[in-house]
Amino acid sequence: MTWTAEKPIVSLKDVRKSFGTLEVLKGVSIDVMKGEVICIIGPSGSGKSTLIRCINGLNDIQGGSIFVQGKEVHATNLDKLELRKKVGMVFQQYNLFPHKTALQNVMMAPLKVLKENKTDVESRARQLIKKVRLEGKEDSYPGELSGGQQQRVAIARSLAMNPEVMLFDEVTAALDPETVKEVLVTIRELAEDGMTCILVTHEMGFAREVADHIYFTDRGVIVEHGPPKTFFDDAQDPRTKEFLGQIL
Amino acid sequence: MKRISGINTPLKGGMAVLKPFDINALSPDGYIFTRWLAALPWWTPLVMLAIIWGYPTIAYAQSGLSIYDAFDALWRWMPFLLVSGFSFNVLISFWTLLIGTVAGVALGLGQISTFGPLRAFSWFITQLFRNSPWLVILFIVLLALPFEFTLFGQTIRVPDWMKGVFGLSLPIMANISEIVRGAVQSVPTAQWEAAESLAFSRRQILWQIILPQCFKRMLPPWMNWYAILTMATPLCSLLGIEEIITLSRQAMESEDNQPELLVPFYGFALLLFFVYCYPIARLTMRLERHYAVKL
Ligand SMILES: Nc1ncnc2c1ncn2[C@@H]1O[C@H](COP(=O)(O)OP(=O)(O)OP(=O)(O)O)[C@@H](O)[C@H]1O
Ligand SMILES: [Mg+2]
Image 1 (cartoon, each protein chain N blue to C red):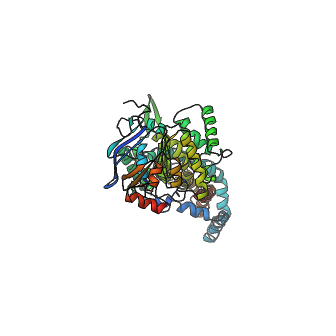
Image 2 (cartoon, rainbow over the protein chains, first blue to last red):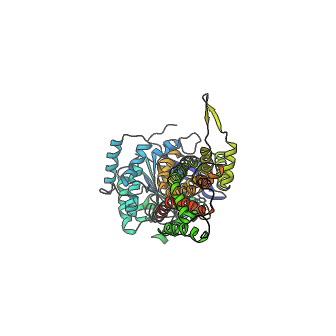
Image 3 (cartoon, chains in turn orange, cyan):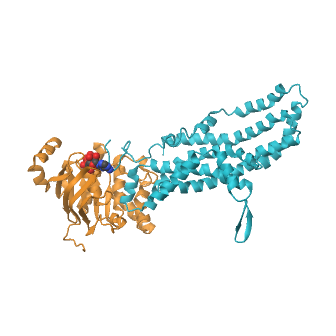
């Protein structure tokens, strides 16, 4: 099956995932079109991280299917490395490589994985660092950067692979309130540039502002979804209302 | 701090730095000897000298050989003991470290292989040689290894000292294997996942991301084993290998086996080991303290 831009770039159908006997995802379906920004919100433990980790194959699934650009993620013959070249992921804990400088962190994957030419990679990496507003920090080690700065390096590191889709798992949850904003600005600019983004977030204001579509998960199912305006102002399900009532 | 799903061990702090490399998890106290050695004051050799000097004076005050004669004998033998004896111990220790490290790294990587049987095999070999008495291993190697073998039509004799090296390499290999395994496992799983999601292959992750991170962590325990191993080289004297203890004995024999010679001669050997291993122990503990705080 060849993928064309009219079809969803990421498509989850009835995805089921268990850890042992604990069923964490109980049939989740989501379609994301190219250039769309979707936010997944929901209470802690509802399976949000598990969900987006399935999309780049960090977790396996027990039922349903996930397609990224027409390729089935959990097919046995899938080249995981090819998939991951297309899907970038940013984690809550940044997970920068501590023995490499910011610039080296950004350059490493294109150099070693894509085997690109060093001068090209370096100029692209410097541009990306500029884009995330970290000029002058190229030679700093992760330990010398603030949380927000590290997270922006992590975003640049993912972008250096020129992915088609970016996954963000609560990327601001470990940050101080002041530094949250700088990271959100970076993500918003990405979204405005047309990057397909799937975000797990607790930042409701941000979700409302950037998302094309909001999904609300609770206990492994999608309870409700819709465009931000309808979702936030006109939630139907009592569980959504309760959650929004607590958080807003 | 929140738990990241997929990771069983909660991360400490916000940054993906190394968890402390807990050498105690690997053995009761991996540094027990080195810590003790490093804690000795620098003037320890002076005390040793005083004892070596004073002991025959007191113990053998009535006997024929005066302390001056004893030290005269030691003085004459000293260059020989140092050049032919102790430097040979150092040579054995270098070879053992080299072979033990190469084999140990391979075995340690085997212990974290994705291939089950290889993992089980590496674990078994590691446990076997970590927990067997060194002297027993040494004797088995001495007796089991052929004293010569034929390669491309050429007969090559395996010198006894090389057998000693092989024998000592085995426990070193096993302990290095544990250091490698422990160090790799001390890197948070989040590092693996971050690298995986950047499309690095398992081999690339291990060699380019995980191992470089724990290299500094492996240095102190590796040096620790070097000091222990150097101290163990006199075991080779039991195999008749001509290292310092064997040569000291031979020297005393040629000096008519006077009992007054025992303390000066063996004391001299002890002094040499101290002078050689003490700086290594000091450096090891300093690095260990340094890396425990900062990556
Ligand atoms: N590797 C794992 N092994 C076993 N159980 C797991 C594992 N990872 C996650 N879980 C469980 O799956 C459930 C969903 O976890 P998940 O991390 O996806 O939730 P979440 O919605 O991301 O929560 P949070 O907002 O706290 O990040 C939890 O009950 C969690 O304990
Ligand atoms: Mg989560």
